[in-house]
Image (cartoon, rainbow, N blue to C red; front, top):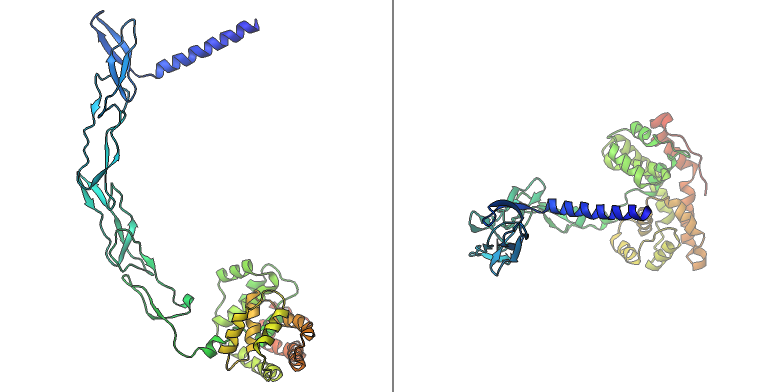
Length: 403
């Protein structure tokens, strides 16, 4: 019983497949003169033609198309079509004539077919760039260069280019660009020794900023601090970038640094600068007489934790710092490389091992005095005067840390 059922299913499957194939195969109506009957004959597949029509006793006989003839679809034709396409001037044969397709011609590179002739792609003039490059079937599409972009050439391929950012290359812009020309940049030939040696945040300012960092930071702490600061407010976008880029303990320092940069002319920032003058003078008293050599600066850097300022950078510091002590610039660059880490903590760590390098005692003593002073009651009172009286209850005062 099971064998009979199995055989039946196999035969049924074959029958269904044969029926589907017969149904899908295209047919054509043919009059048989011998029997005077209308017959449904099978069409011939692409690449062939009908050599002999079907009869009551035989199927359609197909034959392959000869050279230079083709049939690109199922058909009931008595002959194939002739490959009649001829490539014209400025065209090349993209696809040869075959038994299933006619010859295909295409315009050479840089040209496109317009009606029956190849026409050269349009070249976008200066002030315009290519929005869409031309193809063998379509012309170039040009568009006027938008603000901040330019094109100074005639081209069928080049898009508009963005203005060069002079400042990112360490250059100054001497002529602003327009739609047909780029920004003109050149090296600033003025004496940059003092400017290059500038420090974004001094040791005194950094200490004051870090006094403002609470021991526990709530999610909305930066927003509360921003609302409390006088002058131009820090944007929400800048606050979000600070939150994503820095750890919670470093966010307050970065925010206050940004606030100082945005409000250079504000009275509060001027008061901050004036309030730190006494501090800066005290720091310079301790290290102003320390004429450290290149090797000594390199040893100091090797003993600081985290990422190092390179030897070549240290050499540049010595060359460009004329009015500012190289050691202050070195510590500033170290802080920047280490994502605004606490400079005083790093310096305290480094001083512990300098003795093993036979480092000058006067230098070690001077640096220790700087650390002690920046953790002193004087600095804490300066912080209170500059910030806590202005910000009220929004900033939680932190306990002094002594060296």
